[in-house]
Length: 191
Image (cartoon, rainbow, N blue to C red; front, top):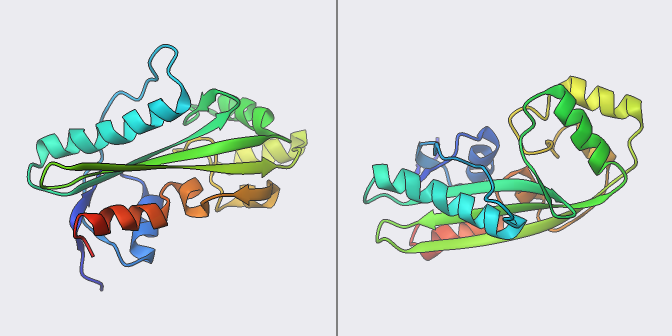
């Protein structure tokens, strides 16, 4: 087993952990942040996602002083509408109808609160072109349950068969843009 790197992952996402491990950056610990993720009145997607990633890092750093804390947050944006985790199948059905046949954006912001107090952050936007989904495809996807616990959908599962084009970071759509994340960690001396 590979040696863990000197940082705490402020996320309970198994996808983020697996992505980090795939490039040799297993965290030495995991401590999911528990913060209010409600958008502020009139808040636009980019400021919102940056605020969430930073708030998660700072919340965990407050409880773990002297540690390097890596956090991330991902949202889907259709026009200017922020799409987050669906609480139920009916909501997810509406999300799939909204995304069907459209180009939308997946935005992931990554934040590193270094042990020296320095905050570094990168935000990556990826465009997704989705095919038109008929009612049967939407029903099958919602019934699969793959969308549970993630913002909108899992690109690495059944939905991959409905994506016509990706422009940007595939790993960012899963939840962690690896190039930018590795650069943040390297910048803090974590190699």
